[in-house]
Image (tube, rainbow, N blue to C red):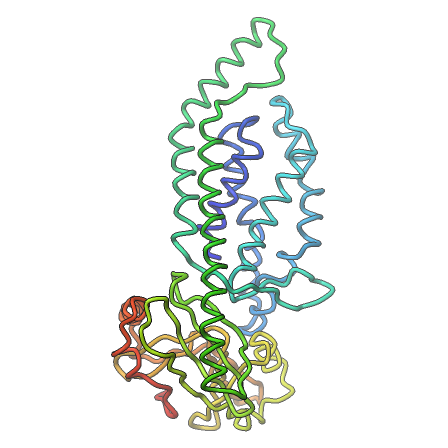
Length: 375
């Protein structure tokens, strides 16, 4: 998910595991370790567009790295706070939890995570949350702001302990008030309840979409059901047949039967790129669910069908979220560049999602896939 969410989740984990012993620094360490797996993006300048797809959420998000990181950082972290009684065992568990919860919520998204690296590049995903979801993140952020506000109380506890120690008290360290821990427990519980709600909604959406598919597309195979941007109310279903893909959307506020949009695979237009490393990476990232469209001057548009599409109000067409323009340069090397129409307006597209979420389908159903596009 987004970096803000990862940092907030890590901060709450730090508060729960370390906060009582080292105060606000537990939250700070949690935010650090909660975002550390995503530092793989620092290698992006040295990677091309398709190589970044394999690298991001790769080895740094693996189970192996979770375990190694907990052993590597446990003793140094404990030594930094030894006078406050932080043990290497607790520090190690903290690193493991901060790292693993980061990976876990990435698994919840459609993007997927390579948790089995370096033994397998299979991307694990449950597709129950969008990569940015305020309803999941907000309770975590509220907890962090509350903890920052109460930091003054923690500082007072530390000052009292230092004074008592000078008077001969041999206590291991200050015991911070439990109010921030209780807040963290409540807020992370709310986020967990929202995740549970997303799974319930996905089961409901899957049942409705599968029923409509069996009635309208008896030869179809349901590939995936995933939430649309920023919510868990409107869901997208992807159905594959031998000739192409059908796409539908479902909301609990729908009053009419599901409407399926069809897009032919058209993969023959991409034969010139078969065997190229970049092309094979794009197919891997799409989990073999892709279509191709010819473009001028021998170029080809590669569309990843797993990640949905937005509505372009200007052209009345569907715009895939993940599509690449493939071509060969003058040296005969394949180039793959992310592509989006010049007249696309993201804000208007989000407005249409809000309409469709509430069951209003008039403008939504007016739009369709375009066979031609301006490049």
